[in-house]
Each structure stands twice: as structure tokens, then as C-alpha cells.
Length: 244
Image (tube, rainbow, N blue to C red; front, side, top):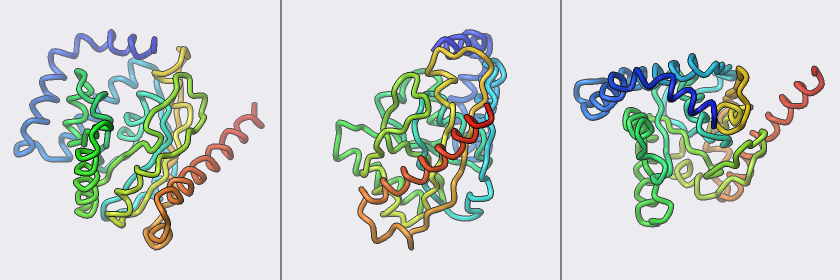
């Protein structure tokens, strides 16, 4: 949290320029391409990383499909999670986010740049509408991030909570590949008291295609994706522990 405040303060002088620029590009998709808006979002992440002494390493880029849409389902550790994915994911992608957390300054502009979807957890009808919209977008080739845990604990320490089955209705409706994403040490950036320079890891795991998950119930898909991520994290954290 202290690093988050520090990064905001260190970039305050940029706010009068960068926030209106984000707002302008987000409000005029007819003038600014998806690629242009995505690069602006990534540039903002780069500024935060530079001032916050944050380094993010990406692995498994070869596992990302070259063509077509897909759903990325990462574990959730804190405020930096989506930023780390957007920064390392070179092709434009979007995000499904809790509506209640998506309308603060800068977050709002960031989500709008990505043409993200705001999910109202208290409104079942709205949630169904968003699920259908995202599924249709994915069918048309768009890529989305959705955090199936739904939230996170402060100072997460690389723990995973149970994945919510409803998160995987989009995958079933779109029949698109599922990309499990393992995030490591992402909590240290903005959701812990850790202040030293930090390196986070984003691991894009092998796709799970519809042929493998299409016959499963959403609870089974959730368990499958969670187990793949947990297995990867256990392997990496165990190796790191052995080296220390």
C-alpha cells in the first residue's frame, strides 16, 4: 500500500497531461485504434513500474494462441495483477472487473482504454448480460482477463483461494481456449508492506481447449484451471526455496 501511494505521488506531475489523454483516447475509439489505446495503457503501466522499482518477468508467451480470442484466468493477489498481465501481453486484451472498484480516477480511464466490462456482482441480470457480451466478443477474436477468485487478501503471500465456477460460463459460451495464468509475488507490489525493489512473475500456461473442457461442469473447469495454476506455482516456489 505504501508503494502504491509513493507511485501516485511520484507521478502527480504527469496527471494533468496523462489522464486527459487517456480520457480522450478512450472516448474516441473512432480516432484511436485498439492498438493505440492499448499502447497508451501499457505506457502508463511502464511509468508506474519505473517509479515504483517494479520489474515483471513473463514466461510461456509461446502458449498464447496466435489467432482468435481467448480467456485468461489468473490467480488474484492485488492491485498490480492486471497491470502486470497487460504490460507483458503484447497484443491488445481487455478485462472483466468488479463495477464497484472500476470507477475511481485513473482506474476508470484505464478500464475504458481497454474497453473493459464492468460486472455488477449485486445485479444478476446485469451480470448475465456482461457474460453474454464478453462471450460474443471472444468469439469475434477479443482476449479477456477475468480473475476467478473474485478478490484477494492483503499480503496474499502467493496463496490461492477457491476459483468461482460462474467465472467459467464465458469460456463455455464462447468455446474459446482458456489460458491459465500463474502470478507470483504480484501481491508485493501494492498489497503488502514490502518496499524494496520487487520482481513479479507472469506465467502463461498451456491453453485448455474446448475439446478438453467442453463436457465438464463449470465447477469442474474451475477446479481444473486452479489445479494447473497451483501446480505451476508450487513448482516455481519450491525451486526458489531450494536455491535460497
